[in-house]
Length: 613
Image (spheres, one colour):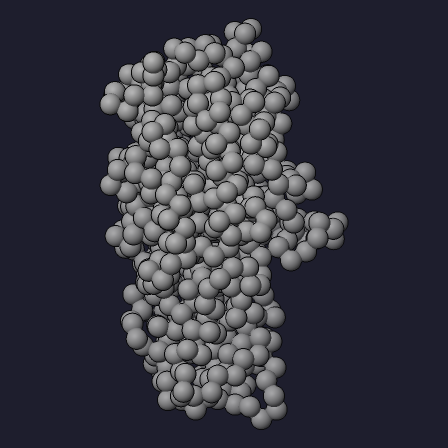
């Protein structure tokens, strides 16, 4: 006889109630546990009956391709189905601008670029394409969208925010949720969205983050994408200002908390979000993971959130020196699933002890598990635990890359065009192209690409900006490329293009004291301009940088953000095949004295919010 919870004709509530009544405490606690794939084998996941496994940034199979990803995830899914109650496991990833951990996937512009595009329908289509590529690898859960409202662009997560404006973030975050979920959450191309990071992670004050030792974070790889973990690099990173904002304190009133940072979560919930990730940051003297008022009373009570809350990476460990206190505080505050991500055995045994001695009530555990199971049933995981392998053909498809190319066109912002140097003429006899970002997919994609912080080089498949330029003028003018701007003697041109690029980074490793454009980049543009009548500067970055003084010598300036794998979207704009339509989603300051946003007086910025030629 089949148990009622396995009967697809029954409603979700009935199935959940039947299953919950059959579960042991160990099975319930297993559902509340999420381990990282590098710390748990499929056999161990089955033995401990864990409810979820994730790949952290760079948590990839070897070799890294869509087929090996699918096989890796399927091993965990199959193992879960061999447990006593065959409760399916849900696999999670940070697919934050496409299925960005997977070599060969389509990488879309980061959220800062999509904010500049100001096109909810585009974002929804990107969500749908991303979901199809994620589902192709048997993954049904992504930790996106970030619905942060960054107020200080020194933050290393600025590019994860759609913009500094609450309404814009709410609009685009909801659009991505709709796209990821599709028409029906139970379809196997639907991917569970996660609104993050609750709450006010974009409102932290510079200098309030707790000290973080990058050497204690092996899961994050190198502290710099092109360097080993040497003391010298640690000293350099610390000198740059890492971990000054991320995981810090939002020193704001509850009124500001609700007015600026809460609305995007309401919009995401209205769009169907059933998973919310809690922030490392603090407010009101408490870490968010211990905020019972915000998590339970406001989010689950006042606002009626019906889904489940997931912790951030090992975040509960910061609550107390005593691990049982960390667990009790976070779960009693309202956390439902804990991203351990390591030492899951210790978490499970400690939570078991906390439940047995009354530190965490069985009712709270039942509530957490009920919420998790409801989402798993809504996703159809019990009835169809695997996706269609034919979806693998959609990963990096021509249609998805065309969509990404469209997104690049719509997200780039033209900030200066002195004398109408743009659009360029295809009939020009020669173009000079320089800058480390011109022919480098790693610089083009930025952080959260293949590795946690991204890295320079040919990290995946795509079209560089240089390749796009060469294709645009094929059979016409000559394109000469010198990354350092040192062209052969006598080589000149009417126009030179310089593609400057921020080094890729992620999270607190991207926090910076100073956002002034490096002197070597200024010198590079000057070297190219000595050989050209006009110079066009394209900036690849995760935020606005201070360019006020050198900008006076640039004839055209394009903010391209981190556009992803389809660099030909920029050549579409440079040669006038499409007009520039992007508008700034962040105010562009004149100087560091105008950062954070609260220090900026109206009318004094270099370029105001919404600006774009």
